[in-house]
Amino acid sequence: MINDNNTIEDIQGAIYCLQSDIHEDDPEFPVIAQFATLIERIEDKLARNRSPIRKNWFTEALNHARTAQQHFSDLDRDAAGESLRNCLDGITDGNKAHRRKTTFIVAPDGTTTEAQ
Image (cartoon, rainbow, N blue to C red):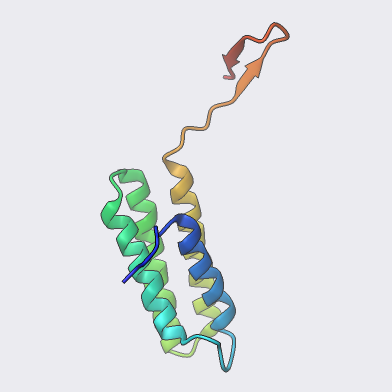
């Protein structure tokens, strides 16, 4: 159960911790539990999200998280790390995907125009 706001930063933090811990012989926190929490966080984010574009990105990130978990279970730590990097990219890109990228030019008189 998630006891915080489950922000993108919370999910990214979970990924960063896992990226470090999967290579440790004796991590501070159990890696399997960390994977379960990461997957739960992404599933929660998917359930509360209405944007189809973000849902696609987060679904891909969820698939990468599950793949990383399987690689870790198979003792392939390098592949798990690669899947976690892909998961992080999906979360980061998905968070940006719903925002319109607009550039404005400000004239000396203070008026603005949208750049083409």
